[in-house]
Length: 67
Image 1 (spheres, rainbow, N blue to C red):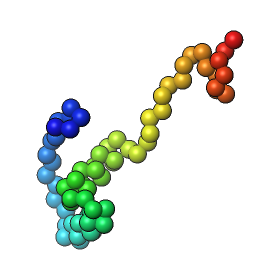
Image 2 (image 1 turned 90 degrees about the vertical axis):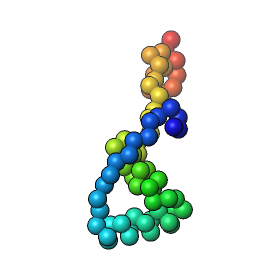
Image 3 (image 1 turned 30 degrees about the vertical axis):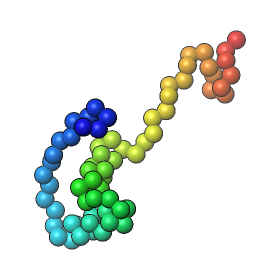
Image 4 (image 1 turned 90 degrees about the horizontal axis):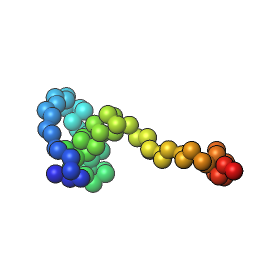
């Protein structure tokens, strides 16, 4: 287990053309096919957005402290 997360297995069915495209893209990124597909699924589920820290109550939008 990595980072305290469980690893679950999901079986998917894809056609030959999709399999070939994914295999080529995985090879281009120098990753194993299973790892590449798992990363695609995670990105679709969680999105590619970065989480930003919530601002403190005493800090205004321009970054100065309230006085």
